[in-house]
Amino acid sequence: MKIIIDATYSPSGGALTQVINMVEEFNSIKGIELVIYSKESNKEIFSKFSNEIIISRMAGISIFSRIFWCQFILPLYLLKSKGSILFCPGNFSPIFSPIKTVVWIGTIGPFFKDFYSGFPLFDKLKLYANKFLMIASSKTADAVIFESFFTKKMFVDQYDFLEKKGHVINIGLDDYFTYRQTNKITLDQKLKNLIGETKFILCVSHLYPYKNMINLLDSFKDVIDQFGDSINLVVAGSMDYDSYNNRILKHIDKLKLNNNVILLGIVDKRELKYLYYNCDFLVFPSPYENFAYTLVEAMSCGTAIACSNTTAMPESCKDAAVYFNPLDKVDITNKMLLVLTNRMLKEALSQKSLLRIKELPSFGEATNMTYNIMKSITK
Image (tube, rainbow, N blue to C red; front, side, top):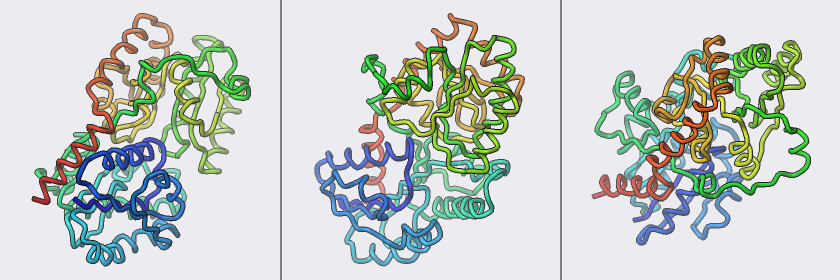
C-alpha cells in the first residue's frame, strides 16, 4: 500500500509527537510505502526517516496558501502519484481527492463561539477557515478519525456527519513519560533556580487566549489566601501572543503573585517529565479540548489531576481527576484546595492515573488501528 501523508500543517506539542511516532510505526509495517508532503519548516521533523519527502514551498507561506495548495495543487499531484490512500493528520483534507482519503481531526476549539475571544482578527479568520474545512472534509473524506467520542458525536449531531464514516482513536501513548521509567531526572541549574524548593502546582499549557489563564490566576490567588504562600504555580508552555502575555503579566502583578507564579515558557520533554513527577498536582483549566495530550502525559507519570469538566476532558481522564467548572473561579479554587490538602485523595488520583493510562493505546496500536481503517476503505 502506498500511503501519501499531507504533513504541511504545523504540528506542535502532542500533535508533533503523534505524527513522528505514526511515521515511525508506518515504516515498521511490512508492505507500506510512505510518501510525505511537507513544508520547508517541517523538513527537519522527517529528516531521520528514509521516506520520499516532497517539499511544498507554497504550503509554507501562510495558512491560506496552504489551504489553496491542499485544495487545488495536491489533488493534481495525487493524480500522478499512483498512491493507494491519502492520510491527512492536520485536521482537513482536499474536498475533491482523486484517491481514497482519511482525515484525522484533532482540534475542536473553533467549533465554540467563546473560543475566539482574545485572538487577533487575522487569527480568527484562520480559525473560521479551519472550522469550515474540517466540516467539509468530514463530509467528503472516505474515513474520518476523531480523538474522542465527544467530538464524533458533535459532528454527527450538529454537522450532518455520516456516523458510519467516523472512527474514534485516542491519542497514542508516548512511552517516554511512562511511570516505569521513573525517577532519576536531573534539571539544569537555571531551571532548578526558577522552580526553587517550594512545592508547586503545575499547569502545562500554551498561553493562548482560550486557555483560561486569567480565571486560573484569580483562583490561585484565593488558594494562596486560604492555604498560605508556601505553594507556587508553575506554568510550562509557549507564549505566542504578546498582547495576551502582557495581560497575564499585568494580572499577576495586580494580584501580587510575582513571587508565586513562575512562567517557564517552552520546556523540553526531559524537563516536562521532571515537572510531572515533582509537582503537587496538575491543574488544567482549558474549557475546549479534544483529547488533551497534556492529560495523557500527566497520567502516564502518575500525576494527580484537577481539570475542567467540559468537552472531552471527562472522557480523557474518567475517574482519574477531580473536575471543576472552568468558568466558575470559586469551583476552581475549591477543587485545587481539595487536592492540595487531602493527601489520601491525591494518592488515589495518582493510582487512578496509572490505571487509566493502561486503557489507552500506544502509538503502535493507534497506527495499526489507522492502517486497518485504510485497508477497509481501499478493498
